Image (cartoon, rainbow, N blue to C red; front, side):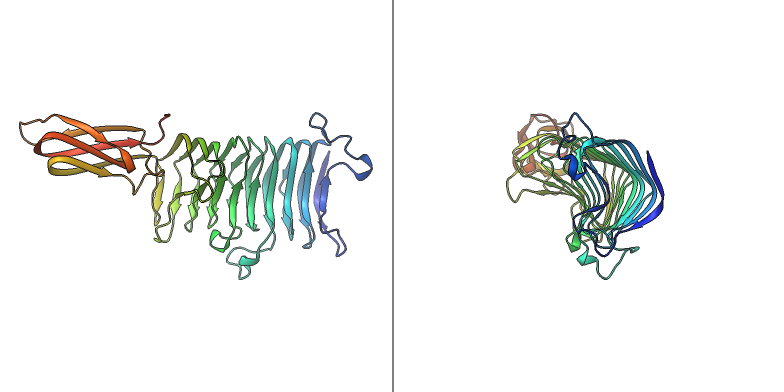
Length: 343
C-alpha cells in the first residue's frame, strides 16, 4: 500500500500527543497485534508528503511494523517526534527533510528548538540521505543494528544544548554511521559495544562523545573522519566518565582521523625523542584517548656512533613510555603505542 503526493496539516484542535500518520493498532484492537511475532502493518510506503504538525504532536508513528518505507517527505512543526519508530523491523527513511522550525540555519531562536527529528526505538532500520534542520535532538536511538548514511544534522547546536545523534542503548549498540555530516552538532553514545563511525564530516567543533554508564566500551571503530573547528582546543573524541569510569575497554580503534582547528585524539600514536643519557621518556598523554592505558609498545633505539648499548622498555604507566640503557649514550628513540589491543 502507498500513501503519496499531498500535504496534511494538523488542525488547531489536533491532540498534542498524536501523530498525523499513525501506523499503530487502533484503540478498539487493544494489544491483539502488538506481540513481537505479529506485526501491525507490513509493506507500506509513505512518499512525497508534506506533513505539518502545527506544533501539536508528531509527524509519523510506526509501531511494531515491518518493511515500511518513508521516502521524500517533508515533516515540520512537530513538538514530540518528527518520526517515531517503535519495535518492529526494517523501517527505511530516505530522502527526507525534518525540522521543528523552518530555517536554513543560524536561526535566532535556535536555543529554543525542542523535540526529536527521528526517534528509533527498534532494530534493523536505516536512515539514508536525510536532513534534520531543527530539533533539540536530530536522531535518538534506543534500538540495535541501525544504519545511518548521508545524514546531515544541523539541528540545535551542541553549544546551545543540542545533539545530532544520541545513542542511548542498554547492551549491544551495533550501529554504523558513515558518510554523514554533523554540522555544529555532536554524536553521543552510551556504553558503545560494536559501534562504527567513518568517512563523516564534523564542522564547528562537532565531535564524538563516548559516555560511560556501566563502564563498558567494546568493539568501537572511529576512523577516517574529517573534523573542523575554531582553534578552541576541542577534542575530536571525548570521554564522559562523570558517572562511572570506563573499566572494561576492549578493541577500541580511533585512528586516521583528520582535524583542523581541533585536538586530535587516538588510540594509536607515534612519538620520538633525542637525548644523551641513560633514560628516554616519551609522553603520549596529549594524543591518547584513554588515560593510563597502553596495551602494546614497539620501539627502536638509534645511536650515531659505533657504540650500541643494551636497552630495555622500563615502564608504560600513565601513558608515558620509558626506555633505559645500561650506559650513557647520545641516541634517538622512536616509539609506537596502541591502546586498542585486546588485553
